[in-house]
Image 1 (cartoon, helix red, strand yellow):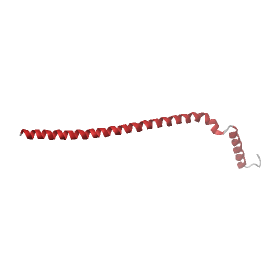
Image 2 (image 1 turned 180 degrees about the horizontal axis):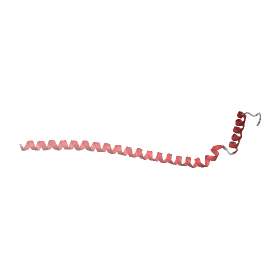
Image 3 (image 1 turned 135 degrees about the horizontal axis):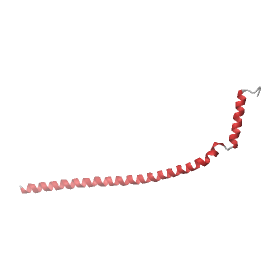
Image 4 (image 1 turned 90 degrees about the vertical axis):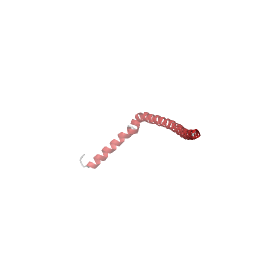
Length: 96
């Protein structure tokens, strides 16, 4: 190694490592068996999330409809109560 600079040694080592990397197919090929099932699981979770969001939207719509119905019932009860009070007042007035 006389006459070879440290930079040349490092460059040679880098070339050797790059060649080894290419021969082994790189990290992607080595990890593919690991991340492929993870991608499947992610897809499954995303589909479950879509399903849950659809059900949530349906439930929220039904809740809104029920709230509107409850509000209308309350208004109807108030009208009925006012009518009953007026009737009671009329009856009391007629007694006098």
